[in-house]
Length: 189
Image 1 (cartoon, rainbow, N blue to C red):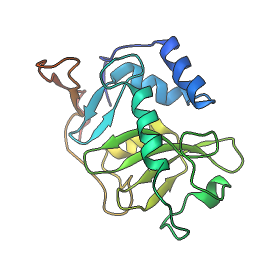
Image 2: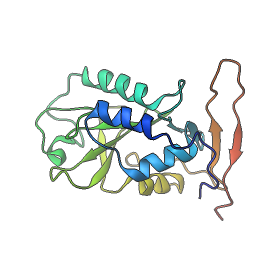
Image 3: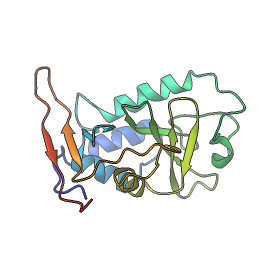
């Protein structure tokens, strides 16, 4: 669906730095997608960064987002409250038992990775930008596929479907650099 890899490639040292900072490893499918295509904007809305770039750096973005979301005074009655599913009593961000930000959209949605109370399987939570969370008990690559084919993957009525090939917009690496635009293979949609 996405086509040939065009990103900045693998950089084990950059992932090691992020994972050491977090205190846990990130899922292989997530790392493979970012290595192959990041940093990029997909279909005009979804942004993913890359761990080995100075600009659009994933590690820096995660740290800044964790701090910002950690400063929010969370109520006890959040719609779609992720705490019961995670087995925690307080909202946590960037921890092995909390929510770790991994991507975002220009519509204010934030995509998080989390493990359930069992600590085994990864799942996706999406914060809709209005304080509500939606849980998807699937891996990142499955969530991304469903997002790109137009399913509601950030809550009800949230689809962002565009027919035809997936549109990629490379993130400029320096001031004045033009945005490169390319398309994935035909999806038959």
